[in-house]
Image (cartoon, rainbow, N blue to C red; front, top):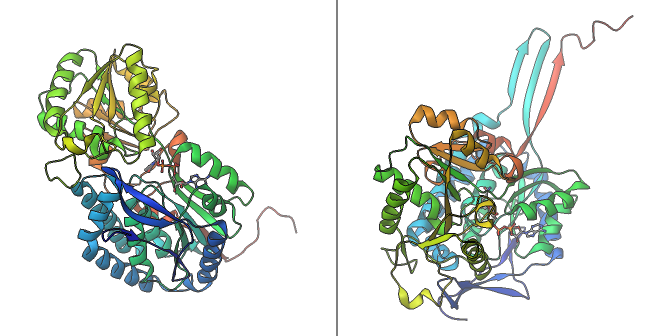
Length: 492
Ligand code: NAD
């Protein structure tokens, strides 16, 4: 092992557990460089972690909310102190530029703080005194939560689950993606240290571990973020024991540019470009297809290219001038390229954007120069599939009716955005099928941890963030004390 490589362990019942087999994690900017090694856990390890979490639940659920908040706040301080080290590690294993990695930690902390500040109010029982008696509406913890997360935002998509689950009195077994397992493990370790053994467990591995986590009878809830295809397997695995679930899945988020959008508003255009290409397009809520009113289509495209060419600078994630790093893995890169090639072969125009700053590593790493695709067909794969990478189609529409029709013609409904005069944009927004619609910005930039976030249709079930994101880890328990518990119409 080399000096700057790190090895992480699983955490089961408060103990660091080594595995016989370990998986190397490469640096996507220089795949010959191994950043570190993650354990490859077995189903047996997953069962041990679930049993530990189940035992811990019996004690943890009885602790006070004040105790839980205090522990979480200590974990927050430790993560803040470790931010410089963790962000560098995240950048190296993921490929996202350093500013982007720091931003991810920032959002994670913001959410953890929101959860701590609101837990008492949201999770406390409500007591109603009324004409028929007294009712307690309690928010009971569910039990052991299986949290399964993807590679694109490993830290924020884990803490989005850990904070509310533990604050509500649940315990957890978390499994991150093998494609970005290192930085998230450091964060989980810092949190787990502040909690009693078994409250927060960490296992690594692939689908076999995932299957155990989603079918084991001791798992009460699944909190999953990942692909819609994987979620279908998970729902089947969980069916036998009817588990509670929050599913945050894929999207094919659209941006609608209305005819009253000011194409010369450079800041707005820049927001749109960033909303298409941040993290090399590997964000669930990135604007993945852009529809423009045909009346302004040509001016729009000209200005878009001008602004995109300024902001997009591809290269080494540690180069401070770089805005976009490599794609996280070879499979994803090849998939995105196949969508571009497919559109091109059918006559679409492919335009590369921005500058390549670090040419010496461009061919070695999983770099793609961000691309817009013009003149694609509405049904081309680049338009209807979730590309999850730096390639975006821009297409014209005839009128608002047509735009709404095109946007809603999708199995997905995660986020969307409408750009133009405010009242007009809100009117169109109300007709879009999505969990979030932003006006004159897109979800990646308009995101706020106070807003409940999630999808409709095959983009998911349930909400994370906001007060709903705290309540998602509870079941409502009504305790009723009636003055007279008899129905008036039952005869003597
Ligand atoms: P993925 O579905 O391939 O993997 C997600 C996780 O599931 C990984 O930890 C993986 O190991 C695990 N897994 C794989 N097979 C499993 C099985 N049979 N049972 C249980 N677990 C299993 O997703 P990915 O490629 O890591 O992430 C990209 C996808 O995630 C995209 O579709 C993206 O839109 C989506 N995503 C959604 C949101 C959201 O909030 N809606 C956020 C980020 C990413």
